[in-house]
Image (cartoon, rainbow, N blue to C red; front, side):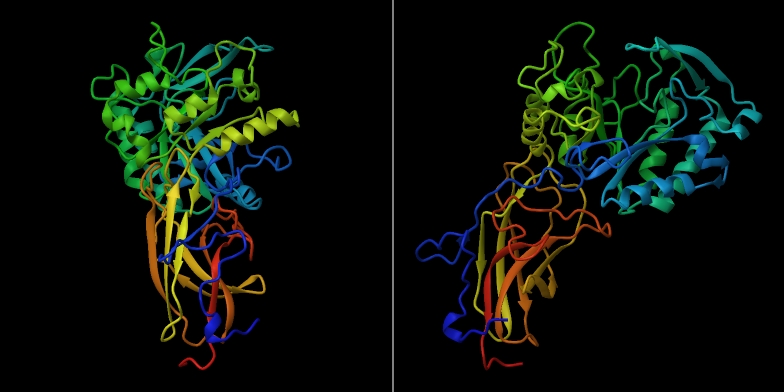
Length: 468
């Protein structure tokens, strides 16, 4: 540790930071792009180790209802535990969906419900892409009282066990419709009625107060098929992203995401400010959506879709299926970085150490398209030799800071009494609650400059001869 005298005990910022404006104690901090794989945002592959393909911080998986539900009050959490632990083992958080019907897969409906008389409708789903042209579907009678009772008990148990679990990033509601996507195309008459939809949504809201749950379709009070959800505590996921996202005005495109969102009303349009927007890039657009010329007229401009929807994350297979051309990767990183949040600290004020106390003020702004949705804790630290010497809880919050808003002020007074005299680096970090999870990194040049995961703000000197 380098010792210093009182004359040097000013806030001497790192080399990348400009000097203060005359007569002002604030020091500017320079911008640099934040990582593409910041936590809880960006592209999401299906669960497997594809860390060499494209930067990411989450993984997605489906789970059949029958794997978890063995009776009305009997649950087997081992399949979900295996998923969560596997994903967390790579430093990632999971997004998952539980389904009751999945074209081409059988056995998702628990045997105990079938024995209790649950009817199953079987039909063939017309697959739009080869090699298989049709897929068998088993669709349960969603009006069945036993099934409805089972769904409500399952969600209550799921929430009691997993709400707030740091291994989970987001949950897509699932449970109803093919793939859990809340439709039974081409057999819409088989889908759950509004009463059942309301029961499922109410059960989700009661079960999950911390972990965010996303619904497939926005719906207002007058929606002919879907129960109103614009005023409920859900985000949305657009599973035909960049294919059926932007409003076209064409007849037959009323189901497109932005068209349905506006039809659902102002609460739905503003949903992104408090609840996350996710989804999946349409398979026909995988990979090529990031090309200068996608080659398919139907593919909508990715950047325009991101700006319109305020999307935070998107399931994708195109960038993860195999190694992609360098130019496609470069363009994808440019566009994906824009998704979700990007925090930048434009300036900092570091006082002198007086009576063992240090006053710190830091501005934070959001340069992305969406806020951060979880109340992760913030910490200050004094670093020496590339490691924290002492950390301090911060009063600042990262939640609900909207793009374009004036910078938010974080201000604290740090108690340095008991620390050895010397020269330290003041730094700040937003703590990922997942053990081994990716740290949230700022869009600043001095991110990771003095220690991994910490944003360096400037030097602090604790002088000789100060009171203990």
